[in-house]
Amino acid sequence: MTEVQPLQRRARRLSVLPPAALALAFALAACQKEQPAQDDAATAKPAAAAPAVTAANAVSSKVAALSADQLREAARKAYGENRLYAPAEDNAVEYYLALRDKAPGDAAVSSALTDLLPMVVIAIEQSVNREDFAEAQRLSALLEKADPQHPALARLKNSIVQQQGLVAQRAEQQKLSAEEEAKRQAELEKKRQEDQRRQQEEAARQLAQQQQQQQQTAERQAAEQRAAEQRAAEQRAAEQRAAEQRAAEQRAAAARTAAAPAAGGAEALRPVSTPAPRYPPEALRAGTSGEVQVEFTVGTDGSVTAARVVRSNPARVFDREAVNAVRKWRFQPVSAPVTTRRTIGFNPEG
Image (cartoon, rainbow, N blue to C red; front, side):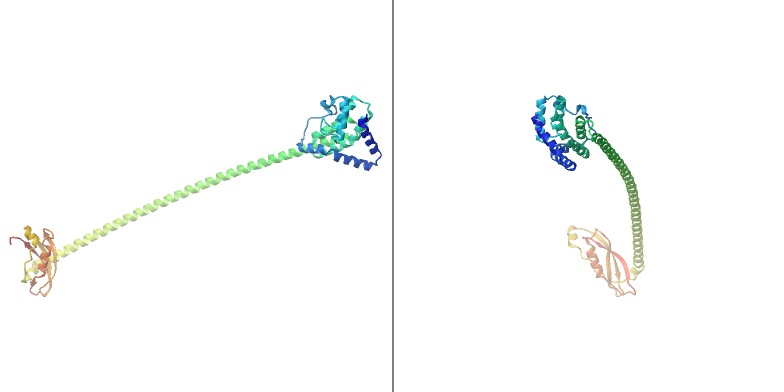
């Protein structure tokens, strides 16, 4: 049993230490030797519920299948490499438990397990604290298999159960909180959609009202424009009628004025000189004949003060010569200006 002699010597050294120093030694050993296990466990996601591990299956079938010599060599190597209780299926505690099953009376194996169990207890507590319940249950099963009457076993099992309950309760609270938050968000979304619906309906109503008002305003403006245009047209028509009426009245008055002197005043006019008009050369060469009616006014001194063409045939052929001739006419003085008309004929044959 040379492979367990270092364990026996370590156990003897620990047995002579004071209780406080012994506890410190176990704590330091646990901190040093469990670091690989902690690193492995830290990478695993804590589980609130894990497959049940009991003392009966604490040692894996893979480890249990090894021979006694293989178990001694594996335990020695694991101990030397500080794989005291982890990882599963490759640690000193499992190897020694399997070896104890094959060699129940081996004192060195029992001594080695006695040295290792305080470290297992510390590892269980640490696993519970970090909520790695699968690892805590595995280590608890190893502890129970090694010593079913261990004084810390019941406390550790109860701690695992209590902590699992707290984790489950916290998860349930978180679930409820998440459900409440989801419900609150759903209510907020429903309210937001309802507010949007009302806002859109109000916006549509206001838009329709605005469009209706714009249409009514446009129709009113169009009606006012049509009415204004109609009034303007009526005013223009009235002005046109008034202008035509004034023109007609003026023409009638002029006709009356012209007719009155022509009837009475013409007899009173006594010509002194009435030279004939010059015959336009173009009309003479063309043999064109015609006549021009000229209206003229004789002043009190007997001279012609105004003359204009009333009508001519053909138009504008003899107008200028007829007016020029009338302007040269002279009459005996009269007491008041006299307006009259004369028709001047043009005949190329004389």
